[in-house]
Image (cartoon, rainbow, N blue to C red; front, side, top):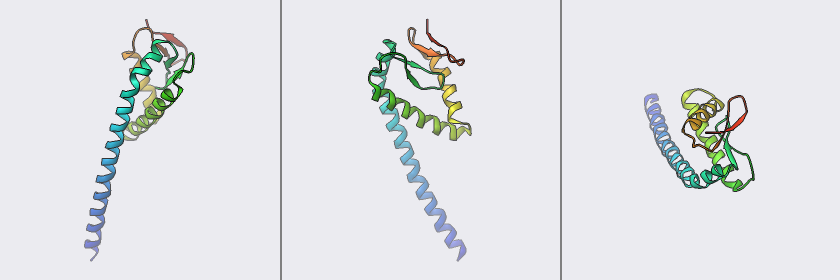
Length: 125
């Protein structure tokens, strides 16, 4: 009798896990799509010097606060991604963001504004 209960519990767990995994995958795809859709606007904001990449892996206003809703939405999605990565790697989301910030600088375009680990801002040459 106990084996039967355990196997039903196991099956239910597998079903729940399967559907929650599908939900997470859908969420990841949705986030990727939103970030891709925002990229041209964010690039224009960076080109104009209105937004820079801080040393925590987030966008930060450096000039006029244009398209504030876009910047806030991007940072919200980045935060979700950093939390998910942190859970997989057993580290803090802050560490993930700091690592991501370094990668963003490496791939960043000339003329865009970045924040060094010490907090100072510079324009990439």
